[in-house]
Amino acid sequence: MAIAAGAIPVFLYTRRRLDSEIAATVFALVYLIHPATVWIGVENFHPDSFLGLFVGVALYAALEQRWRLLFIALLLSLSVKEDVALVMIPLGIWLAFRKSRKIGLTTAGFSLWYMTLAIFGIQKGINGVPFRNSWRIPFGGVRGLLKTSFSEPAKLAAHLLSESRPFYLLQMMLPFAFIFFAFPEIAAISIFVIGSNILSTFWYQFHVEYHYSFVVVPVLVFGTVYAIGRIPQKFRQWLIAVCLVSSLFSAFMWSPLPGARTELKYNGSNHPMVLAAQEALSKVPDSAIVTAYHPLTAQLARRERIYAFPVPFKRALYGLDAFAAGDVLPFVDEIEFVVLPTNMDAQMQEIWSSVASDFEIVYANSWWVVFQQKPK
Image (cartoon, rainbow, N blue to C red; front, side, top):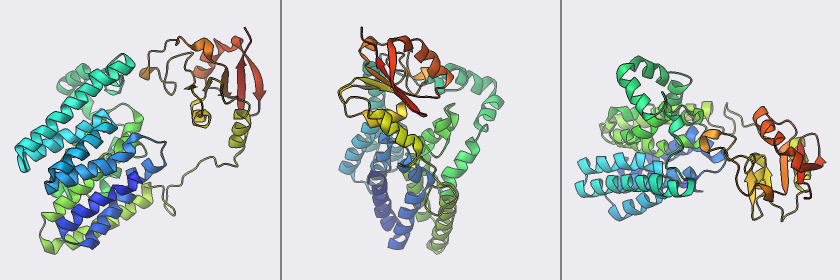
């Protein structure tokens, strides 16, 4: 509902800007069938799902000079995650130049303040360190990136053109037929997010199937509508039609919609692996303290304590040391049950082999193994 509701501010702004409910309906559809919008609806849940609505309302309020609504949308947007400030800061700068210097500087300043607080206060208070994602910055971090940018710009250019980064930009922008480039000042509000996505070494950030791209969609929709509104009336219908055709083509090519070229493949409720998982999980008592292979943890979550393996035997997230220090956590002896796949990868096997002697198999099938801690 939150994802789909992002079409509401798009509709309201387009109807006023282009004085057409037909155009408003077209651009609501353009938002809804954009590949990044559809994909975030089928990805595992992320708070980013609310950004289509919150950022869309913030843009609508800024363009319509509805300052109370802007403040509410700003608070809601920043509550999702700290890096939403990468959209709110340029929005504030645009406001300062185009609408209200006071409102714009307040918006940008508050966003910067909250991002700083979230990273160096909240995150540090939870994780012990302010920032764990520096490994996503190429060339060894900020210092290496700056040095490479000035001393070896060709190397930076090669990085930005590597893998599928140019194709990612095509997927993000083709649904709008690149119309926003005619008057790009609103679309440019997304430049920091797009830039960080294609700069990142993290594969997921420059692939449209993942949540990192969704925050860009409302900005580009509003940017396209804004640009069309500055073009003479006699050309607008043609541009709207071109955008609709381009959006439908992009949706057919890259959105996992019914009848589209992209098909979703997943293990349904009758898949042998799923049935085997249900049987294995039924062997785990409801009150037990458990660690399990992370795709199973949601199915075991109705308990006080559940951990994604290899936690607590090794501090990690999705098996990536980059997210955590890798130390053994102090409550490791409290784990009563462990549920793992029969075919563990090498990293998982290495961690499990170091503690397996403390557990015994209480159930196993061709897919899953349930271990219980041995009596002490």
